Image 1 (cartoon, helix red, strand yellow):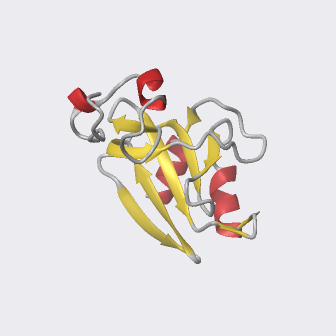
Image 2 (cartoon, rainbow, N blue to C red):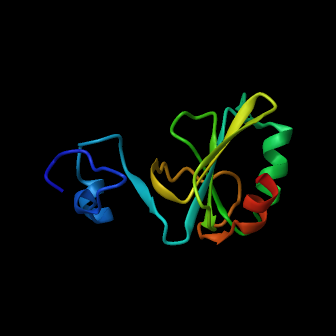
Length: 132
């Protein structure tokens, strides 16, 4: 709000989408997960040469109706939806990793939709349960 980067745990530093989009502070446009029921499953290093790794395909398929976007790194994906977690987790997968967050995290948003996934939040609870 004051030209300084926001903190994922200090609501007074958060701003509207319009204000954030016009700011040059911080790591880019993103979303703060604050425990309100929105969650993100972050698939790291799942895209190789633009192709989705088998382990990641299984996870994306477990989240029908959820928006999936390419991450800032270009070799990962974010799956956005509704879900609850007591705390964030990081899991190792075949050649990549999965991070699950629903509170206390800032996730940079690229808006680069993966495939034909809808631009809406679906139910992530089945995927979260399967991973945990």
